[in-house]
Image (cartoon, rainbow, N blue to C red; front, side):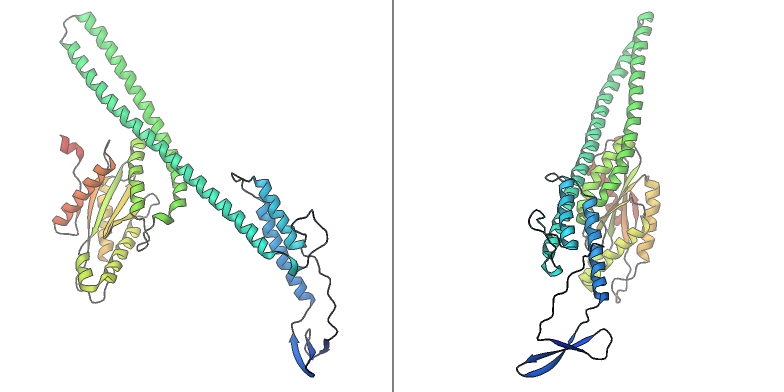
Length: 399
């Protein structure tokens, strides 16, 4: 054991002890001012010494574990941290002086620097925590900088391919109008060969983007666990506006890589103002919390991003989901909202939720995506509340 048995100190001569009839306990008589008084004294037995030994053993095991698995810090290598914790472990369990180069002999339990032990462990864990948090933050930033760079490259490629495709069409049309057969066939063949090569490059590039998107998505899910506290709405327990502002652009960037469908739902709690006016803001807060609970019951996947967008408006980003499935889920959400308990016992009317659905389209920016979902939500409320409305497609607008 780490515990080292201490040598008992002699009792003061003023004390006398006698058995009081109880096993393992004593009564001491102290003479004070001519009178004798009996003082009960806690037993000093082998059990007490064994218990202290177990405590010191456990403490030694904890400190040994900390010194065995150190983390390299920017300003202190792991070996140095392990050596420091090792010194405190020997000091706490064996009584060695913390400065082992000075003096010898073992310190008694009461002479050891227990405050120093606590400070050493606290400072070590604090420094390691700060370093890990900083490293995760830097890695997360690098990850999404990579995604953003690829996303911008895809946009540039799309612009260049649109321009090149237009020029190709003009060249082919001009060649078709030519009457010189052999020249026409040779040049047209060259144009078609170039077009085929460009298509092959596009296909290969898309495969690389899909592979990268899969790897980044897997890494991103692990990193997202590290930042949940600062992006949680205190009233509802789901994501806040900060989380939405972070995840909206990322959804657009990931879509540019993998082309997997992603849908935005904008959800508004109907009649909340009436609830606040008639039954107070506590009832309104209860209604908002109930809607958040309904969202969590319907959208169960880890990849689903649920946020309180502001006030009584919520947003949900659903990856690998098209607008038809999102529409079905929105109706299921409305069923959950209808089954919610009334936010106030005296309330005599029901409240519902209006939903706008917008599937992200190619080369659409996040602001445009939100605007389409908001417009669909507005149309749902205009159609009589508690409705689901799907946003118009950009293709229909430009057709």
